[in-house]
Image (tube, rainbow, N blue to C red; front, side, top):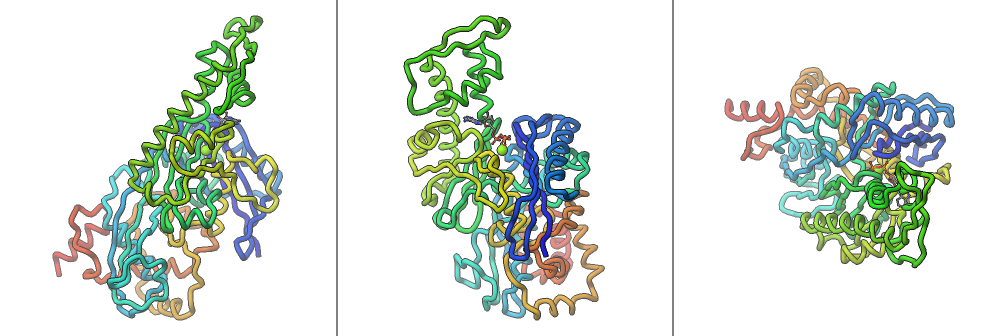
Length: 478
Ligand SMILES: Nc1ncnc2c1ncn2[C@@H]1O[C@H](COP(=O)(O)OP(=O)(O)OP(=O)(O)O)[C@@H](O)[C@H]1O
Ligand SMILES: [Mg+2]
């Protein structure tokens, strides 16, 4: 049986809403889409909730009309603008010696509890990048292994609550419920990365209208994310100011004559701001120099960010550039020269029923949002709704185990509510569950109360969450 899913990319220049049918094997077929100019969004964040929600609603209604479906739960992108990440780790004992999904969830939750999440931040992704089973390091997948101890290192991606709240408000005002929140560059990476690139390590940079969002994917997970408040609109502004020509003309000049490799000897005639009857001759060389200066600067800052990540040596596959700005001629060559690594321009993976218009780097994020819902996430992930996403078929015995714990369910879920406050949006998001999530996960979450307090490493720093403090308090008691 197929299930309808909806993805909404709230970009700085456009809002894209796409509806798809997801079959039992996670295959996707696009059935409707809507793309409108975005209003009330600047440099990746909502600056006017009313205007932003109107844009979302418009795009949504177009997609709904085409798909003939009134779906009201959406997975939405959030910009890196106010995102941050930190590393953490967790250790748990495995009482029954077999590592099942419950243990993987438990160790990842422990890593999350151990992290010092600043109050004004909300966790959106917990991504494991190294599992250690007993004393064996770099275990690709601990599932099904026999061990007495499981350790994990995770990368926790979080975003400022205020940015998230404004986004949720705008989405809700458009009549939608949030089914998931995904970092935009993580979504773009899912849409453009090939299997070999994932394997070898890759940097994915989405260069859009007002922002550039970078992630580095190494060894099964995103290890680094960064943001630059520069996009293709800046080129338009530069051209408009330097050539005293209206923004709409500057945008056309950029798209028609933008070229980072060569500049001709010809001139073009451009209208002057305030005196549009008159035209000024402008040498193409000048146009190219203005564009090159902006793009070069952006790429140099991004190269610095790659260096700052200290992961350069682990990026075996080089960089994939995507987003509307990467349609500039010569982008690949210039980036390759500046980054000193192989670069390609990434189009979103093609899906059944994909509209021609969407076969474009500007649609990588929205396609990635759909793929994330259809199991394209990393091997294991704790998502925004605090669910464990994975690809395993869970065995009957695990389900039985869970049932045996049923008697304490109520008490345990209460404790969970105490431990995480992810607000209205988080609670709602649990309704929009994904196919890759198993019902066992919910039980696994509830099983957290069976924590052997000895499992938890002694906190060296102040525990961030409520449960962390509770555990510390219990440790002192016993
Ligand atoms: N051929 C081209 N050369 C340069 N820029 C282009 C070209 N075609 C489109 N663009 C630019 O791409 C931008 C839109 O890209 P995209 O849709 O990826 O941005 P967005 O997702 O809305 O914004 P952001 O990701 O920054 O929030 C616009 O600024 C547009 O001018
Ligand atoms: Mg974008």
